[in-house]
Amino acid sequence: MGRAEFIALMAMLFATIAFSIDAMLPALPDIARELTPDDPTRAPLILTSFVLGMGLGTFFAGPLSDAFGRRRIMFCGAGLYIASALVAWASKSLELMLVARILQGIGAAGPRVVSIAIIRDLYSGREMARILSIAMMIFTVVPAFAPAMGVVIIAGFGWRSIFMAFVAFSLISALWLKIRLPETLPEAKRRPVRFSLMVAAVREMFAHPVVRLSIMVQTLAMAMLFTLLMLIQPVYEFVFDRLETFPFWFGGIALSSAFASLLNAVLVVRFGMRRLVTIALAAQIFLSGVMVLLSGQIGPEGFAIFAVWQAFVFFQAGLTIGNLNAIAMEPMGHVAGMAASVIGAVSTVLAAAIASPIGLLFDGSIRPLVLAVLIMATLAFSLMVYMGRVENRLPAE
Image (cartoon, rainbow, N blue to C red):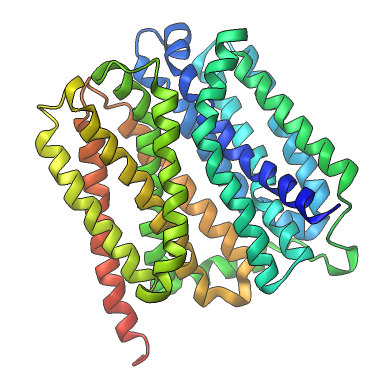
């Protein structure tokens, strides 16, 4: 496999997550009408249930791939993902569909975690960083097009066909990997799963104050993004009457997160990770505070103001989540693989748990969304300020 083909395959594996979330957005009104007509605010749970499962699976996918090989865990994950998508396709109740989505998220954790491990197996140093950056850049473009793809699929075959698209997507990526990419972790380098070592690594991580605070802030940053994803479709439909053009607005605005990642690569060298995260959160507090004050007055004519705020939520995610992950990983180099799984799992699961009940509070206005983001940004900013004080004390200790 040539380098270009390898990068394309890794990008497709990364994109499983974004496609599974963002392609569902246009289907939410149809799901609400068919499966939960008495309480349409429950429909966005389709999104956070998948994220919850993905977070749970993330904890185990890395250690299991270290023990049994990359391909085996990847194929097991793809099998669970496909089977769960078929169950969701056939579901006649929202409750069964939510269970299927949790299992689908657990299956999707395989491509998410193992693809990074494969890159690490084959490349190191700057070349590894270069390939990972290119693949991640392609990945960030997927949310911009996934809702539009969902609209096309729904228009042609109905909303349930979205799940068949997930099946086809996973089958293609799994077959591509099976045919073209051999196992990258030889048996001699595999490490058995030892529960005692996993528990010891988790205890060490949460005993370190900077790591603990970074995970808490990362959880809040991801919860802001998940809350936006849960409420964005009903806001476009009921507040701004732009349901038909929603996929195009969402896609264009989502591209701001890709630009934020590029900007972060330039700014982080000058300002440092913690300072950059703190500045981004302070800006979010200011903008969300303004939006809360305006929330009772904004109607269809105020869409441009809301679009700017929405873009900054995506932009802030691009400036914070990667840096927070790096802050948490920095003291954990000796248990990097386990640390990556734990950080990803804990922050994702807790963020989904925070966003899910907030998504049920939609009242026909933007107020629940912007107020929730303001509260979370304020908490995250306070924790970052406290982290600075903790870091200043650490050398003396």
